[in-house]
Length: 358
Image 1 (spheres, one colour):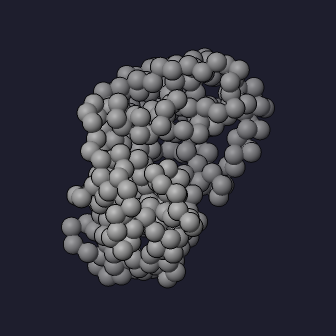
Image 2 (image 1 turned 30 degrees about the horizontal axis):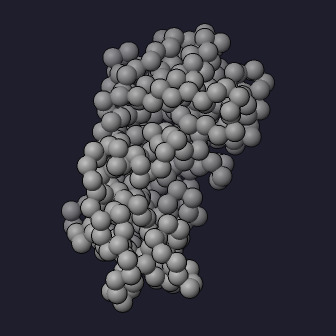
C-alpha cells in the first residue's frame, strides 16, 4: 500500500514542485491549503511582490492540485492563526522582536495540520521548505538545505522528534533555480510566481499599525534615553522599536544612533553608537535539542542569531530550566531578544531556542 502524504500547499512554486515530486516518488498525495483569515487579493498583474495565504494563493494551490490530479482541501485555521498574531503583538509590547514563521511551523504546519493528517490516515506531512531530515544515532536530525541562499532550517529548529519523524522536505536537495526549472518543465501554474516577501498577516500596513489595531487600546508612551541614562525625548510606544534600528527614532543626531536596548518594565528605549550593538554573550531560553539529548557540559557550535545571519563560532553552556548561555568567539551585532538562536554542527541543527534580554 502506498504511503500517504499530506502536503501543505501555499500556492507558491516551492510547495507546488514538492507535491509534484511526491507524486513522482509514488506517494498517495493529498494537498491542503491553510486558510488563515487573510483573504486579501492583489491584482494578478501586480506580481513583483507577494504575500502568502491570500485568496489568490488558495486559487493557485487549487489549480496546481487539479493539474497534478490530487485531492485538495482548504482548512480553516483562522482561530489558531489569530493566536500567532496575538503572540506577535505581545512580543513587541514586551520589547522583543518576534519570528512568527517559527511559531507557525511548530503550531500549525507540524501541529494542527499534523493532527488533520492523522484524521486522513496520512503517514507524513510535507512542505516546500529547503531543509533535510536524516535518521542518525537513533534520532531524527534536521539539516540545512543544500542551497545556502534558501536554507530554512533556522525556522524549523523548534520541531520535536515526533514532528520530525512525520515530516518530509522534498526540496532539501535542490537549489531554488532547479525548483524553478522543474516547475517550468512540467508547466505548473506557479512556475513564475514570486516569493512572498512579507509576514503574511502584515499587508498594506506597518507592524506598529497592526499592533495598535489588534491591541485595541492606547499604548503607553515612554522615554528615549542615551547610554548615559540621559533623557533625549519621549516615544509613542516600545512596539515601534527593535534592536539595531536606526531610522524613526524621533529625533536627529549628529552621528548615527541605534536602538541598543528596550526595557519593557520602564517603557524606555536606549540609543547609542554602533559599537554599543556588539555583544559576545547572551542567554537562550526554551531550548529544543534535536541532534543530541540535553548536554551536561559545554559544547562548541556555530550559532545563528537571525534568519539571514551567517552563523558565528561559540561555546554553549547548559543552565537550569532548559536554558543555555552562549559565549561567542567574536562579538556580533544586534543580538535581539525574541529572535531565535539556532546551533549548528556543520549542516546539522543541534538545537535552538529564544534569545532573552539580559
